[in-house]
Length: 130
Image 1: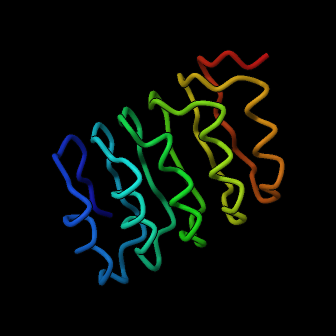
Image 2 (image 1 turned 120 degrees about the vertical axis):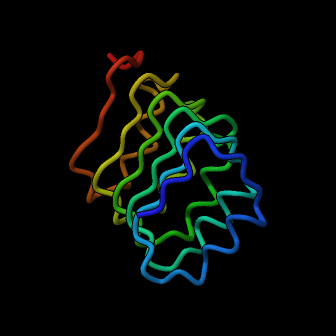
């Protein structure tokens, strides 16, 4: 487990985590991570749990996580994720736990999650989902 919450990070910083084969949980809560940073995160070979709560800029970059094929848990609580951003998660076929609490996600955006056959836990607390 590596907790880098509230730390100022660049894509270069995150690229240095790729060789850490034992890293299965990465916590980036409260950081500013965009597409470039998430592309580097997706390169962490055995990453299973990713926490991006209260992040700024992660939403549009979620499509970069498609390469993180082993990702089973993703926390986006209180992040800037929107319905359009959820389309980037469709390729995460092992994702079983997704937290979207207190985001701008609506019922319409949830249609993008239909391909996630392993999804067992979906947190929608504080959203506009009806």
